[in-house]
Length: 302
Image (cartoon, rainbow, N blue to C red; front, side, top):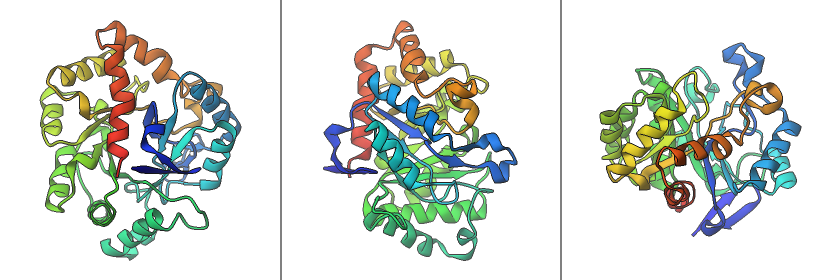
């Protein structure tokens, strides 16, 4: 089967090592009232992605969607200069970051927009979205508008078969998201619940994993929320309980200050810092390769 990228269609075997949840150009600065949340340093990003590719990463799933400052021309520029496979996304994020159409249209009309971006192309470009995401919920609640978007995402999935990637605020509402998707007849094996490394709880993770979805340990390096040593312990626990096929990794870079030139960890942190630490704590190189290569390939295959 094939996967849509910014550069066109590729075979799933070409994905290689994949960062499953990233942003290469995102602007959340308006609602956040913080210019640091406008990640638009393309030259610095290109430099980091070139280096990331040189150390063995082949693909990035870019989950910036409608209302988040998505800019396909910027993604095309990154691809042309780095040749990194970039998978684009459709959908709507979470409150308070929605464009006005989320409030004006019903869920089926929102789904039509997403379906068009998958089947025909993202507005004004030839790039087709491959992922429905990131679609999210607020901390400890799902607002009326967020519920509408999740239903639209489910509708889009049913029509296209493409995977759904979610955002959970600090890892909350994952089970509620899954319950909604089950009611909406979504194939749960094509759902990635994001940011579960921000809510490290063994029983919580097991209840989610037992539903058959993917679990995103995708804010790696954001140690003010959770130490990476703890992330590794919880990944090890899931592996021990038989859930290695459901784990995916990424960093979720969203700010200028996350870049190396901004004083941050940079996109290479996962490869250069986290993975060596995980191996030193008992996760095998073979298990890491399975998580980084086989799991994204299976999730993204439609």
